[in-house]
Amino acid sequence: MQVYLANTEATEQFGASLNKVLPKKCVIYLQGDLGAGKTTFVRGFLRAAGYNGTVKSPTYNLVEEYTIAQQTVFHFDLYRLSVPEELEWIGINDYFAQQSICFIEWPDLGLGFLPQPDLIIALIHQEQGRLLVITDNTQNKITSAL
Image (cartoon, rainbow, N blue to C red; front, side, top):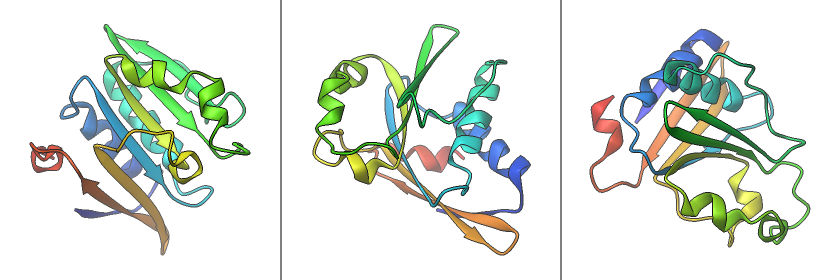
């Protein structure tokens, strides 16, 4: 699936649309260059889920946790990871064992320590906006509901 997103608002709106279709346990890889809109996308999802606080990139914390209406969302940013083994030091498997939605920015930096994604969302700078490309690895094809 490919969608052209003309601006930040469109990126947030598409993130919000996922709030209606994602299962309670899901792993989403977010790919794209710096400034491509990965955190903006997650912000749209969280706003649609009812979160009203600040949504920032977890670059320095590595992970931000959001609990909204009995649903936990983890937002990982692996950009500053030196080696994938660091994920074991933070107890990465404990996060994925929970009934939660996990968004992972820069997943290629954690290869070998991350579960396979249900969705891969790539955001690619294109003209004034960005092209969103989704690879759906689920059996029920989440994207067919979008």
